[in-house]
Length: 555
Image (cartoon, rainbow, N blue to C red; front, side, top):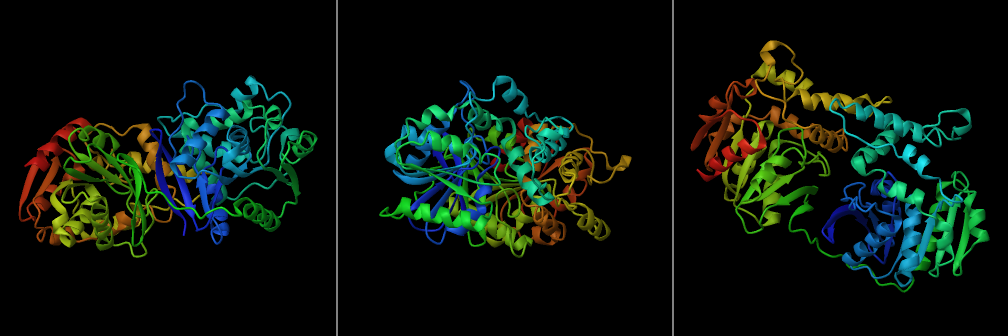
């Protein structure tokens, strides 16, 4: 089983995937990818080794290195050393691919005693480097646009990165002799690009600036330089052979996958011979992101505020993610232990086999138990109300109070329409249009109720407060699981909330934003609870909502 974890390294969050048992091997990815690249290798080698695939700083879910001064490959190598120390790995076999082969090389030069074998697959050795002008053009800045058009740009960039080198030169001489990946593969590549965002060029450009050839002469650790003959970097093996360091060898492989995996296994066995099995360290997160392991799988949560402060769990509107209520969480974290999460099927949380409200309620209760923060005040936004109510019904001792922000009570006809239309398919499409469709879906729900209605009666009397940065984060999170992003929302749509609220023992406060069509049924629902209060408010900025919520949970 592959698990995901966060670890704090010198104040920075580093994300990784881990599988198997045995001596450790560490896998690094190329740019702008993430540890997702190594999912097949994690599964393949887990029968014999503890396989750890790291997200390079600034990629995947790992926090970036400071932008000033400009990070170089040496900085990434030092970060790798600190990460291995935090993981209690003193010495290991290390595999780097393309960009990360330079990180592996620099790490091996700087820390030879920590390397059993450094395997560099596809090391690039251009004489003198590509030059600043080329790097600047190749690493065209990634910017989130107000209209979401950057999503189409990212998809187009991903396509051309697989068709031309450099991608911006679309002449025949630059065409790569390779098939264009299918939409699922392009989706995975583009998703990694979107996750890196403005950081996508950090390790990438550092690798282009890095001159590997002079460092070969200083390499003393055991090393293997390998490449497959269908890799554009294969010809550089000639240069490496001409400058081969002591304790190093070159492996030339064909393009087939199975022989490549077999040779890697041989190298991993040689590197781990006599090495002890890896003993996993516990998460060191006091604040920030971590995973909670539950019977169905893992749930990503984010912790803010003092660990000894009263706990407040924020459950976002559906569909959404850990980034939905980030501003509200920050506003409340001075005095509360604030918890946000990805619900199962969203972002980085594993989906449920039977996604109904009872199961989602059990997951919320499981998170509170695992974190040891109960009893907690629970805030649920819009469609999340049924999930929070289920948690309170199943585990009343865990819920000190419930605050329901605009709970919904659709009629039978409306329920049928919502079920069909509210969470449309976002399966990858060949042209990438699923990305911009989701962007507008999430943006429109802030302006109309329901989001797909466009008549004057559907207009919400409010300003658009969701930022392009938050929309980008939500799109990125939700397209990670396109087949499950609507699981929680569909469960909430068919839930009989009015009947269940009458059985809630915890105090319930219902928030009502005046003159907003999405809150039309909130007052009616509020009367269903046995110990209920109705709190009206106007402003919709996170700061004002934070004040209203502070009043609700204090009352």
